[in-house]
Image (cartoon, rainbow, N blue to C red; front, side):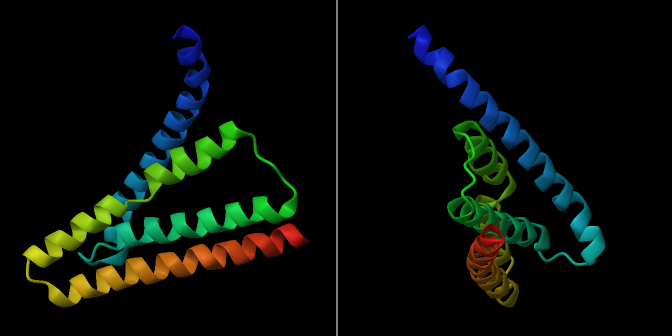
Amino acid sequence: MVDVIVTKLGPTLLVALGGALGATARFWVREYLPAISGTEFPFSTLVVNVIGCFLAGLVYMWLEHSGQHWPAGRLLFFFVGFLGAFTTFSAFALDSLLLFNQGETLKLAVNIAANCLLCLICVFVGAWLGGRIAAN
């Protein structure tokens, strides 16, 4: 049992560190983007989801096609820890529920469409760009 704990401690700490950094980055976007955008629309959730999807596609495809190989710990740190904490699909769902409960039908539709479409587009664009970068 002790061997299992020791073996999993390093990866767990890497995920925790990545998660702390991802959550901190998300916090800063949430704190400052509304002041910059000047609107109550939940842009901060959309922005972190779009950026996170882009980075996931970019790094994944770059690694697949560049011949670069990240060790398991770095993959856990970045994909599970950092991006897992940075992106906020649960926050997107809650923002959508709040808009629904407030009767903000247009904002609700825009929020759902923008998050779904932009995040899917960004993961594909990120993957394409990662492949192009790796090819050079």
